[in-house]
Image 1 (spheres, rainbow, N blue to C red):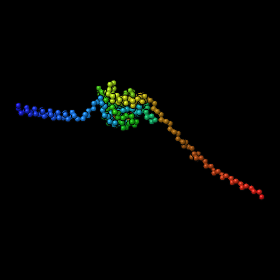
Image 2: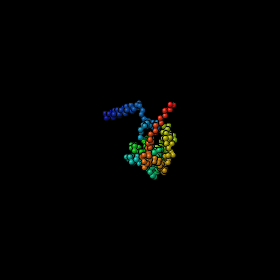
Image 3: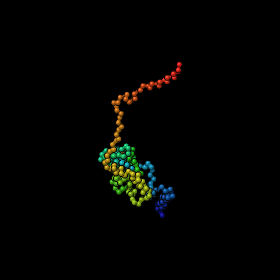
Image 4: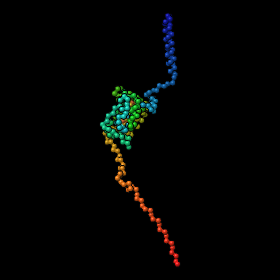
Length: 232
Ligand code: SF4
Ligand code: SF4
C-alpha cells in the first residue's frame, strides 16, 4: 500500500477520534438547554418585553413617541385629553390609534421614562411571532377594545397550551379585568372633568380695624363693703 494512502487512513482516524472526544465531553456535561415551550423561559423581573399600556390613563401627550429613537410609536386622537388628578384617569378626545411597530422597536425603554402618567411600561411577554411583517405592528387600541393591555402572541392564544402559558395569559387578563370599562371609554370622546371651584379670597376692602375686636375699658373694681355702724 502506498504511503500516501496510509497517511490518509491515519488522518481520517485521527480526526474521528478528535471529534468523538468533543462529543463525549458534552454528552456527559450538565444540561443547560431549556425545553421551551414545554418549560417556561427564565424571565428576570426587570426584563424589557413587549409593552404594557394602560390606555385609560394616557393623556396622548406624545412624549413617548418623541422620545423614541426609531419613531415606531404612532398616536392619533380626536382631540386633547386631560388627566383627572382625583382619579388618575384621562378624559377628552378619543384615542383613535396607539400602536408600536415591533419590527423597528429595539426595547430600549426610552419611551417609558418621559410618560407623565406612567401608563406605558415594559412588559413581560418575551416572544411575538407572526406570519407576516404586518403582524409585527401591535395596535394597542384594538387590544384595549378587547380588554387587553399587552399583546397575546399566537402561542399564547392556543387552546392547548402548557400550564405556565395558561397561567401567564390569565394573570395578564386579570390585571386588566377591573379596568375594561375605562379602557373602552378611552376609545370614545368623553367630557373633560372640570376642576373644582377655587376657594373665595377674603374681601380686600374690609378695614383692618374691623378685623380686631374693640378694646373695652377695664371693669371697675368691686365696691369696698361699708364698716358696721356702732351705737354711741
Ligand atoms: S422601547 Fe425604545 S424603540 Fe421601542 S418604542 Fe420604546 S423608545 Fe421606541
Ligand atoms: S407619554 Fe404616556 S401619556 Fe403621553 S402619549 Fe405616551 S403613553 Fe400616553
